[in-house]
Image (cartoon, rainbow, N blue to C red; front, side, top):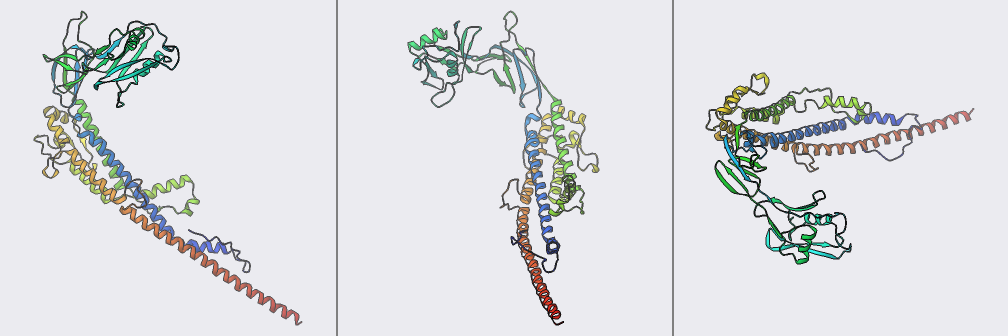
Length: 508
């Protein structure tokens, strides 16, 4: 409330405590303003509650539901290798359970220079210590064979500087050459290699002049000017594959990691057996986690919709807050906020649609076309839609028709035609709920121009509060003027009384 800046001297004639009287009068005048502020606070709390639900729904949609759309949540496999030190693997969702044979004849290799032994102190200058150029090494650009990259070595550079220049070397476009250099003091060897593997990978110094070549040979110990990588060579189910540039390859839905050739102690070739088996435990766990998170969200909705309202605990006014401790304010507001969303139409409608989405029959070409058919259902109406899992029945369904279980959840189609899976239907409910909540309360961080239903209401309340503050300011000034007029009248009356009294006394 605005207040006058005029300094008032009151009660001189009447002896009345005018300020206290005006304050009490203004307390009565303040009642409509306090009600507006309480209404404003309640709508602000309501807006915050809606926006928090918006966050919760978005989190459920973008995490839980998104993960359940992925085929990796259903097609889960274990992969075991008989020669795990040489080859290991993991299954993708497209893998097929079975036994496969793999022989690793050669793993993919990088282009690598391993220098002869050279005894150097990596921290000492390679030349006379000046900034003049000692030599320049030219490396052919793997991305463009017509271009070379210059690595300039100064007399003041140390071996550590040379290592750094190789590691940070880039082509003309600023792309890293992908080199790794190191000098091992124990081995007394300088090693230079590419980060990537495969026969297309090269390190070529052939364009380097004689000074540079001498540096490569005498300082770094390189006998050759060019090195190439090698492709991996494996035999998968009797089929030889020699085109693999990486040691990480996916074949038949199995992501294989090649570690070393499959050889026995004598160096003779061996064949590893790769066994891919369905991991029902992992799929059951994924479905259980999904149902648990759904139940958590449903439980939270039910609590919000049934939360008790405490009518005797409206939002506190500013004056009430002054008389309470922080703990008392906290306890009061806990009850004041309770029941804000009780029987809320948006949340009620969304919850009903969630339960409906989880109970539909999905046209997926399988007898496992509903959650009930795979052992997921409610036990009683008193559970308010909470779902329970019959794990034995779920496992039997996954074993009998894993694709049917997957499509029941993740199939994308048309809801009206019954071809949308449970997860997509639930995601559509979340999307509509988020839209409805946003329309009602806007989003976190929205500006004063918030055009949501509550945003407009709060803007109007604020206008009313401003008008009430102006009215209060005028009313307070009016009261003081009236009391001031009374003071003037009383003072005048006192003056007249004093004159008459003096007249009577003078006549004696």
